[in-house]
Length: 535
Image 1 (cartoon, helix red, strand yellow):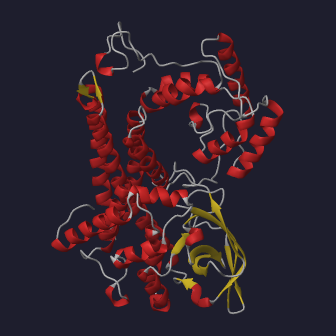
Image 2 (tube, helix red, strand yellow):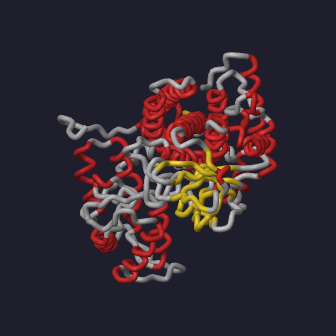
Image 3 (cartoon, one colour):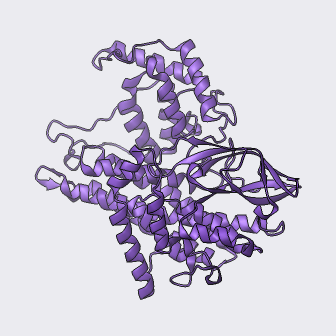
């Protein structure tokens, strides 16, 4: 993926990196986010002029690859985009172009291909559906023959750049078969609603199709080839996401190590302490393993290997897991200070976590980046299957009003950590949350949580502002101790303590500072004695 086998590819990579550093610095990305804008159209046209949008298009249609492998070249761009947290609809446009150029009647879509390559038009793949995970071959959206064309009805969600797109490639069921249709976003009956996301540079949308009429020429692919096209699009989307995460991991690793060299304690840089060295060694090992795994997947997909689907699945599983672990280490290191590295960590790791969600294993991946996915039943039986974020929010609002004490958010009660009564009160409130089905919203279900995503937690936090909450338990019980148990604890420790904390039965604390050394981990004098238990 990152190899530069030829001078042409080296020039392409260096030109792309220079463009991103010059045209999309982190300050620019933050400004876009503050303005509520995903990307600038003029910026995207300039990116298209570099050839990003032409790499998957054959020469006879006006495109061409740099190295002879458009997917490998595109993976280089994706990695550099991840490295700089750059904006732009590279993935949705690429997956749509893949379908257009590889279908049997690509000449029919020549004008659309040309407009996408020039950057004058933006398209996205509408494949996800509300309350469901990745199931592209099981759409509920329908396309019915009508007046010589088709009428499309149904809902798609988590459509990347949906509100910024001119065209949507919609996966639908037509006469018992799976088909894809190009639908203009300005067509009558198309209604687009933005969806929330923790991603700083990507925006998503929910799209309603109410009797949307399209011409017969809107069909992309013949009935017998649509399934293969969707599989091909999926593989390309997966490897590009993995490549992006590798770029993000490179940046995260770089600024985390630099932060450790810049920060000093007792006259020594933090990077000189063995405890942190081991962490950084883990991050570097995972980074290179992610790169190697992604490189193999890119090569397999590019060569149309029989193992391409398996290689892409392996890459997204491994990269999705290790990326999140690296992100946690980086945030724990840099979050201890208000350094520039910390603000960069928040921005970059937010992008990493979102992308990693889509790269999770098929059987375990969450429903997507902005979540309205399926929700499994939890131990306390309070999370209905298929509950959307808004349904969850409404249920939380009603439950809070009936069960939690109201407060004035402008002058909330202050819990005295030295007062035992404050801790008893916090445990009582935590027990209420658990029994009501609102404790551990983002904690895994197997340890007593709900197993939901950040958007559900965000919705609950917004609804609970006017109510008394057990906030003194957040730190260190949940944000430090339970998070550490999830990362490094044994299975026995996780099952014993996380559930107990969520039920309000245990308060966990971190014993870190010592009289002789403050919080210097390298100088810790406390030592365990006797046989080690619990791992």
